[in-house]
Length: 271
Image (cartoon, rainbow, N blue to C red):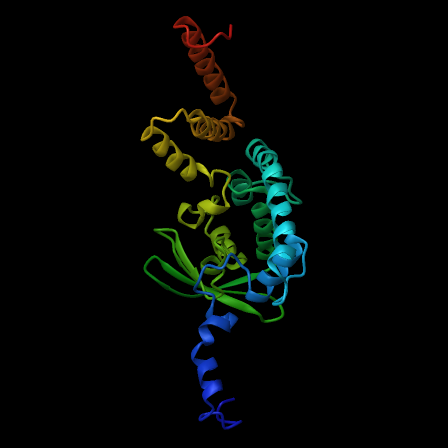
C-alpha cells in the first residue's frame, strides 16, 4: 500500500504506520485484551452505562448514569457471586471430561463462552504435520479451509496456537481444545486457567484484606474473607466427592466428628 500510493514521504502516514501495533488487530493478539477490540470497548461502555458518551459530553451528563450503574452492580454482585459459587451451569451438551471441568472452575458467563469453543472443536478436522520428540504439530481446519496450527508438548501439556486466543482472551481456543481431546486430556491444564475467569477469582483480594486486618488494630470484619475462602474449599471438596458414594460417606463422617468436637469444646451451639 505504501509503495502503490507513494506514501513513503508522507509524515502523517509514517507516524500512523509506526503505531500500527496499537490499532492493527492482527498485531494486538500477543497482548491480553479480554477479547475486546477498541471499538467494542467504546460501544460496550456506552451500552452498559446507558449514555451515549461523546467528546462533547460534559461530566454531569456522564457521572449520574455511571453512578447508578455502579450502584446496580454493587447490589447484584453478592447474589451473582453466591449463584456462581453454589451452582454449576447448564449445558447444551452432556457434562463430561473437559466440559465438566470447565463448569466446575469457570464462572457461569465464562463457561458459556468456553462451551461455544468446545462445540466448535467437534466440527473441526485435525492433521498431524510433524512430531519431534514429545512436541506434536497439528493443523486444525474446517471444510472451508480456514484453520490454524497448534504446537503441543504431550509431556508438559504445553501448547500454543497461531490464533493467539489464549494470549488475547485468557482462555483456550477451540483449536487447542481439539488437540487436548485428541490426546485424551480430560481436564483443562492448570497453566491455562486464568484466575480472573474462575469462581475463586476474589480469593487473592480476601488474602490481601486479611493481611491488612492482621496488621491493624481496627475492629474490621476479618471473618468475611475467611468465610469465603473456607466456603470455596469445601465446595471444591464436594464437587470431587459427589460422584463417589464412599467418598461422600467419609466426608459426612468427618463433618459430623468436627461438629461434635466443636460443640464439646464450647465453640459452637449446634447440636
